[in-house]
Amino acid sequence: MSGLLALLDDVAAIAKVAAASMDDVITQAVKASSKAAGAVIDDAAVTPKYVHGFSADRELPIVWSIAKGSLFNKLVILLPAALLLATFAPWGIPPLLMLGGGYLCFEGAEKVYHALSPHSERAKETEARMEADPTLEKRKVQGAIKTDFILSAEIMTIILSALPQDLTLPFTAAALAVAGIIITAAVYGAVALIVKADDVGLHMAANGRTSTTRRLGEAIVRGMPGFMKLLVIVGTAAMIWVGGSILVHALHEMGWHTPYDIIHDIAVSVAQASPVAQGAIEWGVTATLDGIIGLIAGLLLIPIITRVTAMFGGAKSNGH
Image (tube, rainbow, N blue to C red; front, side, top):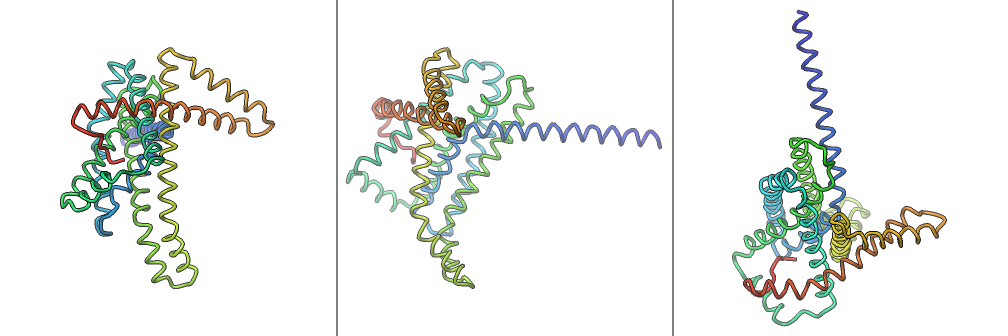
């Protein structure tokens, strides 16, 4: 009997250690995931456009298909690649962050450029032809998954760089997997809520039991177009800000400290001039300057990437 009790004590001790380890994994995953907030916001901001124009009964299946593709990207392709990188070539993380940061800057700057320039008739004709394409849903999902792969690669690289360097390989793998699952669930759960908000609002407006419920439904329907525009603006700003921040910090890690030091000194000086909220002011100034660098870098990359993509099969097509 005493032997059985001792065995149960050992099992309980192992369970406690396992539970503590899982708590540590989740804590590290959540902490590291917060560093990728900009890319995550952009992912959530751009995905709803992939269901635009489809019937209401196809919206959630499309979102689910993209979410499954996103999980495959993160867990089957990118996670093993990240572990190989961390094990055999950790020096490659800053250059990869530079590439990802440059991509975010380019995408954000391109959105700003297109927002400020009128759409051509050729672009409108192309959109009309796509709407009439019977394979449109499949192509939209494939395009979304390809775009997600790039954003997911950036997210997983940011998370990997944010994790403590002394973690064991299994712990790192678990933290990356948990972070990937959390981010995917958050992004596509939010997307599902966004794309169905109109239907929910219409249902509330038509079938609400009280006048308050009906008015709320009408307000949701009226407010969604503006909300979608705001979401695109926030996503674009997040791309530019985070892309610029990644470039500055990656250059700092690679030995070029000047941009980081200048931004830091300006932010600290401005914050110290204020008697209140110095931390918030320092963060705001830093984010603004990172965003300016990101926008400049993105605008410089537009003609370069456009010319390169034209050399390899035509104009850039990524669904953004």
